[in-house]
Image 1 (cartoon, rainbow, N blue to C red):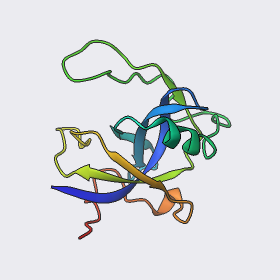
Image 2: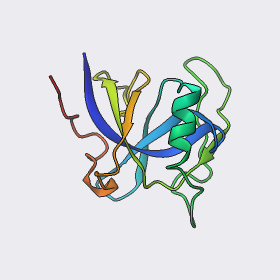
Image 3: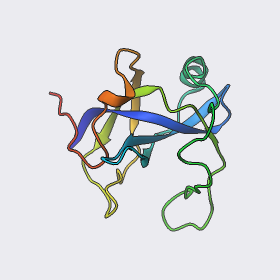
Image 4: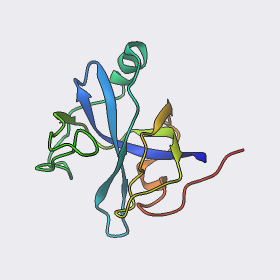
Length: 132
């Protein structure tokens, strides 16, 4: 079952000018940005459009020093570019989560939500909003 919800873009793969996938997060109850999952691959057009919303971090980023797995069953790590975590993206996610509370399957990006503040996104581990 898939539901629509919001997440914060914390990093991207490839480049800020042409992102290919998004690393998504949500704040936890202690105010730390936690990684919740990765998106499906963006089309080139979608990546170029999204690039206008992204910026390098200003100051310390909550994910500095983190490594992200390239996929299930691999020791490879993703090369990511951290971004200022102030862009909210509406995504479709499968309700299945792993033991850490992360989405087990890639999220499908729908649209940037400039009308939603990062503080209004559900907390890490909270139930997702359902849509018909």
